[in-house]
Each structure stands twice: as structure tokens, then as C-alpha cells.
Image (cartoon, rainbow over all chains, first blue to last red; front, side, top):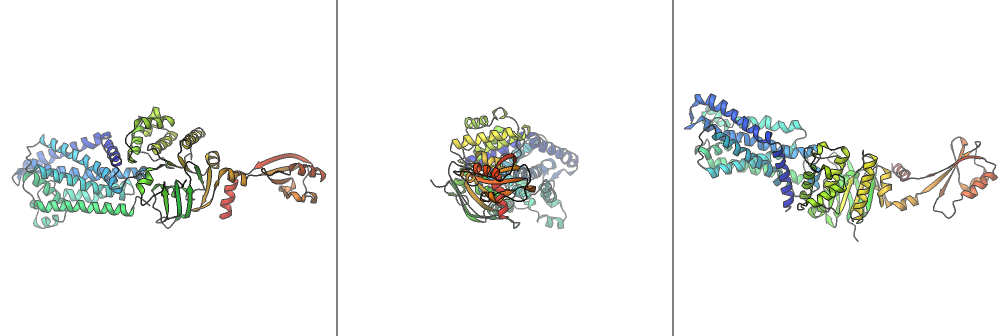
Length: 253
Length: 308
């Protein structure tokens, strides 16, 4: 195991994060605060409570998931796409590092960033609402699994992308709708019956539902199913990453 | 001593169907400088990319220090440093950080004293905290060299190190290469500048269309092909070469205004003295004399044309 190599990649990626601390941290905090103002204060006043939780508190887990998913994908995809774009990838490919070590460095750093952002948003949320955490360990577990699996997904997108437009394509066309329709701002039990059934095909529903369960002890779908869904998604992403490296797809000719 | 790099029947066909390497075999001895010479698209970069692990071989084997570059890639790659042809650097990174990154990537513990020595040898020490985007093109190229040397490789690949580089930097690089050789590092460089191969290489390999046409000791190559031509400008043009001069196998220049005599500088007798006296015998007058030595370039162009 080339531990130094993993540390070198991890450090370089984290340095990028701290170099752009404004974009990295401040912007998710600002946008989350805006969501609080718009959804929590303006709309929330008319909604009262959802499943016995004040609306302002109810949207916090969804907001965190929303940010963690988009940030994980964008950080991880950019992290591997950028060296590909400037050509610096030659060094990674010619270095004595295994595929596993490359993924560990890049995805580990991207997941760390998302985790830090999630904690910052959570802290920001406390400035607006009272927030119980019923199952803290489960909350951390869901958070870590989401950071890791979506960073893996971002890594795949970064390797697949041939230009900057493609880098934005999947997050914009697939991820954002799935997240918004996944119950970030509402419980799917608030939807008409037909839409509830359709929503169950959206994998993000299970992640947000499980994460919300960790806070309030209530969920749209059983928490075991949520856990299975996130574990399955992580395994799927790992499988794709393994296939990419085995075949050298889009990286090693 | 076994070769440090050994390439056996290496072929590479890209997904597009383009066959970049057609069965290349090459042994590189420890401590030598070998220049791979060839026109654009000859397969030089594919060859070194395959040795360095960036390109997967289609068939054939490559070993570095006895380690197969595919099966035993960790041991093989740890011995190798690569300076790529294109300037491929992250602009926002600082010089020292990018060099530290390279060293770590190759599994070596941090050693800033060593890295600063490299930067100092490459006249980059005062730029160590500068962002890469603020450096000139020549300096960026030096940063690439510093990165390649950061993990103390035993084999260094330089892919067109002086393409688009000014004369001064080129001389500096040659000096760096010479000092690396003195330290026992094996150097493989690709170039299409003949002077570069002539100036610093121990051996020269000529590659074209995915095949190695020739690999030879540079001095031997030069000597073997090192023929000289004597161009004799005549006072008055002649229609044909006089019979008395037949033994010299002269060639008639354009318009019969000059005679060209080819001789071997290494021969015991060049025959020049006899030729000049026989010219007078034949009643020819000379207005000028010039000699011309065939360079590596002539050899190279001759080889590439011959096989085309």
C-alpha cells in the first residue's frame, strides 16, 4: 500500500478546498440560509407542522442532503476532471499507486469536504431553529454513506466527462430534479397517491427519508429500506469505479 | 550488467485502429543517454508512455529494472520519472507544493531539503512559493523536470524537452542532463532536433511509423556514415567528366560547373592530393573549394526516406 501516495492526493485535494474556502464553505452556508428564509420563515409560517415537527426544523435534514449530494458530486467530479483537462493526470497514471489508492485519495477528500459542509450547515441551522437529533449515530452513518456514495458518483462523472458542459450535465439534468422531487422540502405523504407511488422509484427519497428518521424518528419509508438503498447505491458506484479502472475506460488508452 | 529498460516486441494499436507501435524491441543500458529521433507521429511518445504506464501495451513486454511494467507496476514505476511533452500543471498550485505532491505520489516521505536542492539546481529556488500561473513557459518546463526528479528516479524520460524552448534554456537543460548522467541516472529523450541528439546522446535510435529503424552508438554512427564531400567549383563548365578522373568516381554538379568528390575522413588516404594534381593534369581550373560533412540529419533523412 502506497500510503504516502494516498496522503499526497488527499492533501492536494483538500488544499484546493481551503484555497477556495469562500466558494467551498461560504456559498453553501449562504444558500442554506436563503432556503431557511424562503421556505422556513415565509412559507413555513403557513404550513405549521409536518408529522409533528415544525416546518423550519423539518426541512433541515433535506437541506443538508441536498447540499451534500450536489457538493459531493461537484467536488469529486471536478477533482478528477481537472487533472484530466490540464493533462496533469499523466503523473497519477505513471505513479506507483493502485486504482484503489487513487479512488481513496480523490473520493476520500471529496467526501471529507462534503462532511465538513454538512456540519457547517447543521450549525447554521441551529441559528434558525430548535433541532433534536433522535439517533445521532445513525445520522452520522447516513451522512458518511451519502458523502462517500455521491463522491464516488462524482468521480465517475468526472472520468466520463469529455468537457466542462458534460461535467454539469448529469448534476443539472438528473441529480437536481431527483433531489428536489425526493422530498427535501416535504414529506412524500403530502403528495397525491399516484405521485407517492412514482416517488418510490426515486432513490433519493430513501436517502432523505432515512436521514430525516435519524433526526425525528419518523420516516416516509422504513429506515431499514433506506439503509439498504444507500448501501446498494454505494456498492453500485464502487462496482462502476472498479470496472472503469479494470478497462482503463476514458483514462488509460 | 542487465539492461535497465528492456522492451520486447512491443505493439500498440489504439481504439481508433491506429497502430502506433509495430513490434518495437529495445534495450537501454544503465547510465546511458539515448535519444529517440523521429518525425512527428513516429510513435516516440507512445513508446515512452507505454514504458511509463500511461498507455497499455497491446502485446509485448516492457521491464524496468527487471520489473514488468504491467504485472509489477509498483516496483517498475517507482524507478521512473517522466517529463511530458506538454506543460501539464495545475495553475493555482505553488511550485513547492506541486513538487512535494509528486514526491508523495511516488511513495517517498517528505524531504524538503532534497526538493530545495533540485529547485536550486534548476534555478527555481526563488520561485518556490510562487503560483505556477505566474511563471514563464521555460520555468514551467523546469517545474516539470523538478517534479520528475522529486522521487529520485533511476530512469528519466524526457519527451521533447526542448521543443519551443529558447537557446539559453536548452543549454541549461543539457547541463542538467549531463549532471544527472554523472549521478548515474539513465536518460531517454525523444526529440526531433538532430542537434540535440548529436550534442548529448550516447546512443541514437531512429524511429518512424512505429518501427525502430536503427539504434547505434552515436560516435559509431557518425563515423560510419561520416563521409565528407569536396565540392570543386570549376573555372569553366565541362560537359562530361574527363576520362583521366574516372578512378575518383566524381559526380558532376549542376550545369557542369562543379565536381563533387566523396571521401572517407577516417581512411588512410583521402585521395584529395592526387585528385587535385590530376585535375591540373586534365587542364581544369578551380575557382573555389568547399567541403561538407554529412550530419546526423542527413543520415536520419536518408533512413526515413529509404523506408518510406
